Image (cartoon, rainbow, N blue to C red; front, side, top):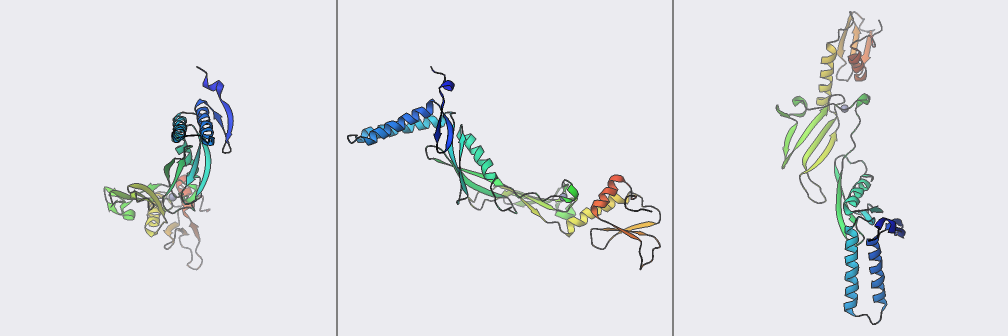
Length: 280
Ligand SMILES: [Zn+2]
């Protein structure tokens, strides 16, 4: 028996250089034999069928082997095509997924499903699909989102806040305690292209009064525990996201005030002191 590794050589096929092992050599021999039979004027239908069957069998063996093979990757609706090299269909499907995920889908607002196929060397198409989630908007002040589900903000039952039935699944809504952004996770989403149900989809929704009021309330609660320097009082500045610090006794027409935004208030929380804002 010959060592397969020492027998491999390089060949160029469809622009990609791949190794030629015994299984590919058998395919090439079967291809040559079929071409020879086809060129014969005296070839019978039976001889042709036999040569075609031999090529089919050799190709099937190559596809089952772990020798490198060329696969064509496709996205539906003219979304793109490419050639890859993989040792197996499984590996080619994984490569398709990575390749498809790198596509430009115009920043979808909700999860989408992208479809395509992997085509093997026998010309057979293997359907493939992958979910593309919307990009998560960044939080404020370089913070990580702090996802919560306060009943006053997202509704639902007290023991299961923000969870509502949807088809055979649920929609789970969370809100960020820092920036008020909403995240909805649907466990019963439907792929509009295939009609498949029970998929997971994510959607982000802008902050609204309810989520911002919650953020404000917990921030106020936390900073309430930090005593203000003597002679100062604090109040939320109207409906805005600002805190107004005022020195007591300041004239109405000339208030001695400091306006603080949430980023500065978080700094106060971190330092547990108002000193950084009020320079007495
Ligand atoms: Zn956030």
